Length: 124
Image (cartoon, rainbow, N blue to C red):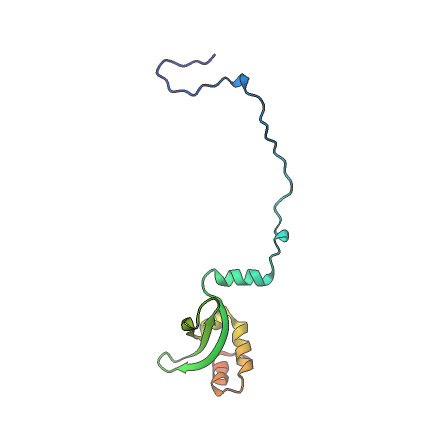
């Protein structure tokens, strides 16, 4: 028998009339990352993309006399031609060093690219 006074706020149910739950819990498997098909390229993409845009292509090189730095014209993935921008080489070497090295190797005959590679220690 339930014991409460008149005026008390209570939730009352007859516990003995309820049957057992019809639900049944069964563990199938533990969570496994190997089933997701995550590759090294995808992990690198996510790591870089978490803070910025993804470089699609490096197009041209120039030397900015005002800032006294070498810059590369960057085409960003997913953005239009109007959003291409000149970025300092030292920033690109931190984010996408392999693309900068490929660009320098592809344009190694250009004297501006040679100067850029020498100034930033990029092997051609």
